[in-house]
Image (cartoon, rainbow, N blue to C red; front, side, top):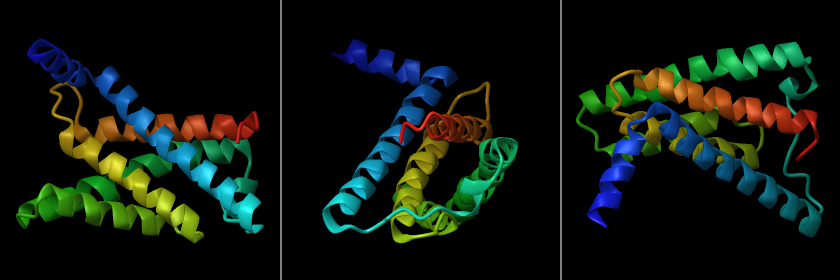
Length: 163
């Protein structure tokens, strides 16, 4: 049992394993978002999802903005900056997670459902930021990669109409 825990801890130091684990958590958040918005729509006849400006843009625009520029800027401003400011003020990790996730959710506010999606996605990303202790890649790079990978998967699922 102790051997398994040590192996898991060592595996999580591997950046690829770490990225896969946290990308999986983000996918769970996405699937739950899709499921609940679909249930609300079917049960109550409410369109919980509203298209935003990015939805109607070209594929090139989406790739550049949503899959590269946004993850870099969002990781810096909504994980890295809050973490360092709040850590300097001696905030506990759970308070840092909550503050960062609220900011990330507010950034993604186009409707209540998407705000909640942003909040829970923000939790996953700040937890990844806090707990990455690898020596080869910085926390910002690791979280950017997770965010980019997630946005590419979402874009791909939109293109092939998996949602």
